[in-house]
Image (tube, rainbow, N blue to C red):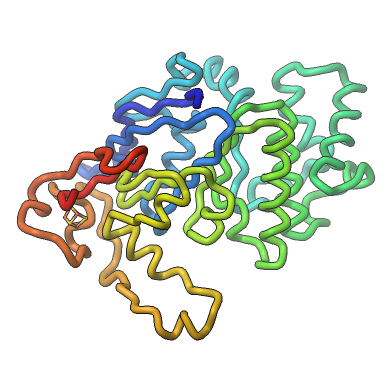
Length: 316
Ligand code: SF4
């Protein structure tokens, strides 16, 4: 498969006080392939959204390098960010907060095309109508305002806005977690169909392993800013290696109530530790049932332990 994006030792830190550093993303290495969906999962605060925003150019990495089609992504200058934002778009978790309430839906969708000088005014208008239809809305919706729509419809508007500049890569940052369960599968199916039609590459961020399994070709598991496991979707479910991934999977309910009641759970104890000035050693050591002394002092490196299956754990 052809690489679209490569992350080399990418870290993102935030200074949160005197001598205090919040390590949101720590030394992440991975490739994202053209046309795939890479699911990124982990509990809240694990750095998955910061990773998505860094890959998409909203943040520049504190250290490390991101390349897109072989060229280094530089987003510190407005001009560079502007160019990259035509290739890489984002769909946010909360579709209402991300849509300007004072703009009509048509203007929201057209804005990116205007910024990138795409098409003349008449063609842009036509594209707005086409995009509304593509996402399951209709042209009459162009003159309305975001508050007139349901959550699911607002997410469809967010998707139309992302598609308007004809990107190649889209970060879907928990795009369904704010929606009713009944609407979630509609949005997932819409994203899947759009990918089949246009060949988009997705980074799909979620905390729900069920949804990630359904949509992803590969899955990356993050814990406290670190990539702890990465493999093909089927492989990671059949041969879960990292103790944290095993705990996440144990938390997913089985649809069959009989099997569910017999299931032995190894639930996580304790809370996710603070990402401020993290301790040395494995980030999961404080909660891991298999931790040894070495885990508290030495960070495990991410290594390939089965074909295309990478894990960061001293057990392997
Ligand atoms: Fe657990 Fe040690 Fe593996 Fe970390 S390195 S996940 S603490 S066994």
